[in-house]
Length: 81
Image 1 (cartoon, one colour):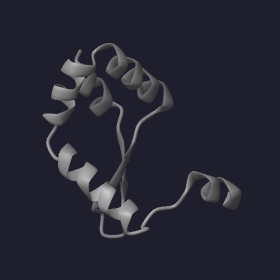
Image 2: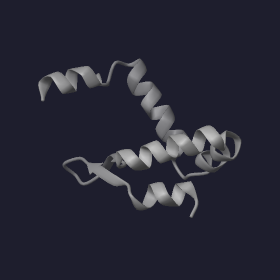
Image 3: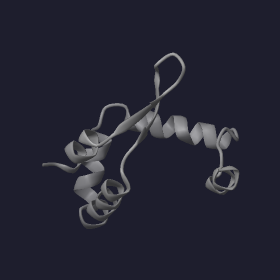
């Protein structure tokens, strides 16, 4: 099974009030496996990940939100919980 298949089978989506997908979550063990895979197969993994539909656009949207201040720091979330 390819890494993208592993990640996609275990993804959970966050949706807004209209049911539109706004974010994705993966289990911590899957995230750790993904990071390990990326470290050992960086070149192939980069090509495989960039081929995922919508990934590049999602990264760009995330960069724009960070640059415009539309994000919440983990520390703030943890403090408020």
